[in-house]
Length: 276
Ligand code: KIV
Image 1 (tube, rainbow, N blue to C red):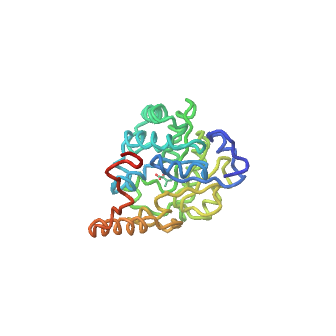
Image 2 (image 1 turned 90 degrees about the vertical axis):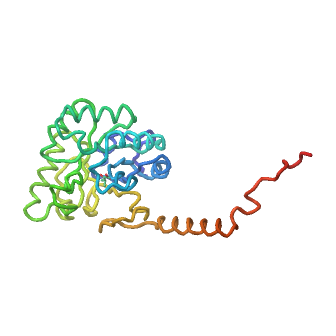
């Protein structure tokens, strides 16, 4: 945690003020126990719609609903005392227009207590971001690879090579001008991510966008080795908890079948000690 971090819960202006200082640390969290682990070490706990794939086994984030985000947002808020909770607006809950986005964001904030939302999109979402921020809803933007647009993008591809670089820069400037307090850059080439970072006053938070961003975010289940369905190049594995869990479960199953678990110390005597 940064020496400049406040002792009270982190809020969006604290994140914006970190531009050009020490790197922002962000991880996803979807549950209370994971939020408790993330809280002392991270500036932001992101309730990302990646939870659809990671927790619910969906093929993409497109099936995630507002109700799912509220349920997981409430769980995460119960585990946080300091890190700021940001919750994704899921696919279909905001794209129709600013009023729809406002209604969905109000539900997320009112029903979870989280102070901020994230939404995907650049220039075409600028008017929605402005509508929300002018009405007291802090917005983190998400540009580059925007997974909710996987079908129009044609896959989870790098966004911003060659002719696409100008569009990514325009997206970044548009979300900043609209009032976003920070912007996620996903799967953007490292040189372009550095240019975007230099040209904005708000912090950039990279995922697969190189070390020059103002902060980094990863899906916590990816970096812990708990979600192994696929592994993007930008994920570094800091632990192999999935394999450890598999070994533990296999050992338990073998011991139950061999009747070596439970052992005597896991049972209760027929009469309480000290009683006749
Ligand atoms: O849904 C998510 O987890 C995200 C991060 C990958 C940035 O949006």
